[in-house]
Length: 115
Image (tube, rainbow, N blue to C red; front, side, top):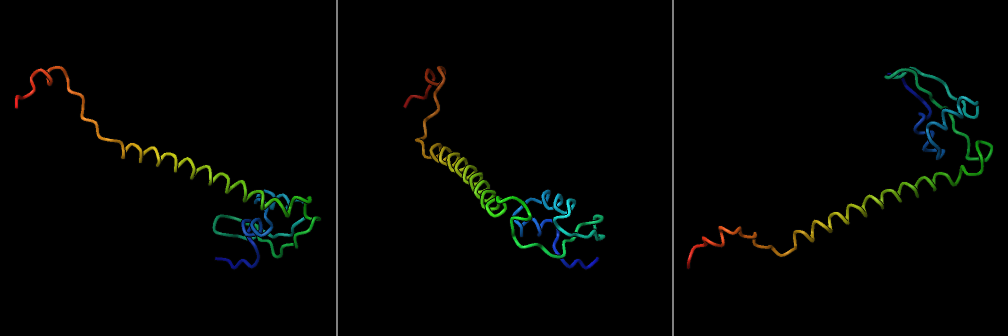
């Protein structure tokens, strides 16, 4: 295995608060300096140093984009858990409902045992 000093695409994306696709675009456009190194699954980019978060890297949404992404992610999680809670509440109501005796058919009523 090769020693890789620096950041992987995923680590750089998380550190900068952008997507991995955007990191690749920055590498191809020259905004980020990276080198290709052999890895287990072929060649991978390694970024030696990350620039400070400045507006020169991208537009002014760079500093707010990670927050917006996190809010969207949390919103989706809240929707999931809300739906799960509603489903569980319905199941609970079914379990707590009084048990009803099964309806007897006409021949069961006609030939019921005499007590």
